[in-house]
Length: 398
Image (tube, rainbow, N blue to C red; front, side, top):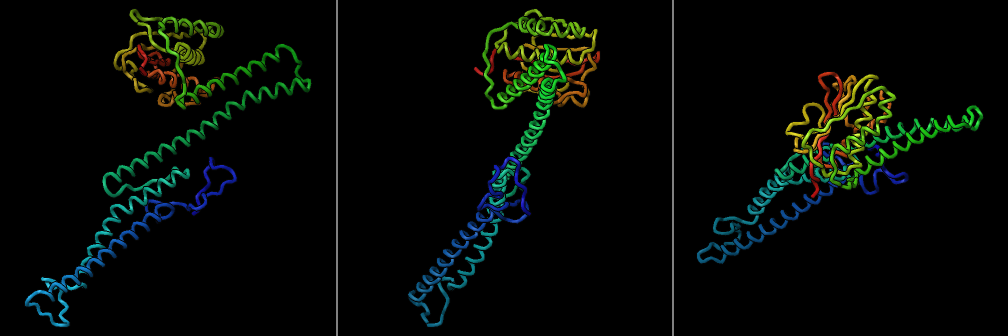
């Protein structure tokens, strides 16, 4: 059956690639790269057997000549016994054929088949078929290689699915502000809306939304590529919290929400990129204010992190539980749905009534990871949500 061309394959290029047919493994028959390998394996086995047969004939002739030259040997014509055991060439050849055939079959089943399947799977992975799987067989090393190929294929399939979903989500997010801009400009051109300051301000607000979304996508792209550069400075956490709270004071006042902060005694300065940590706090505060009703409270606390400080709930990061400084943003909203705790930091994950893009917590997670820290989300006993992150006191890449 002809396999479907993958969506990333260049337009105009033949599919499957010239000189390569579909490659099957796991009981679907040899093809592609695996079949030439099997052919070469069998040809090599036949050549070895031919050499052994020739040696058998030669040994038989030597034994036969040795017997005829022995003193007291029969030397009679027609006596076809060869060597001291009475062996002639034909029994030796038959023995070589039997032993060689059994050895070839065992070697093929133990090495040739599994290696051919691995080659076929590798070719299919190279062609973009991430559904390929092999049945591990042969020596332990080949079994480990087969399991590794299966794991790589699973990871590539998952990454491809995430890429497609990410592109679809990005397209959806960009479409909304662009549509608002287009309709607003067309309304002014057609004379439906006057070209006054109020309507221009509305269009400017949409461009700002679009700009923030592009900035967020750029930050995510840099984090994914490992190219997010941090500029470390010794900074006290209280200054970071004060800056974040001040920048959200106007929004909190409009919503009628109180923002309070507290920094425990003895918290030291931390070696971080202050701009990026402020961005993390800003994303967490924006998320908390968005879900806190009027008259509610949002608190930001800072303390030294102890082992297991992340608590229960969604947790991410290799540094979970490590000593460091922990920031926690708590709101008095309805809390996070239990089923979303495990995916709260995934991209474009948001509640139905959320007005955000669904990227804020993902960006916060990536920035914390880049600092070598951890981040977690839990629901509090009073019903709100608490999202906290821990960063090391000193940078981890030294």
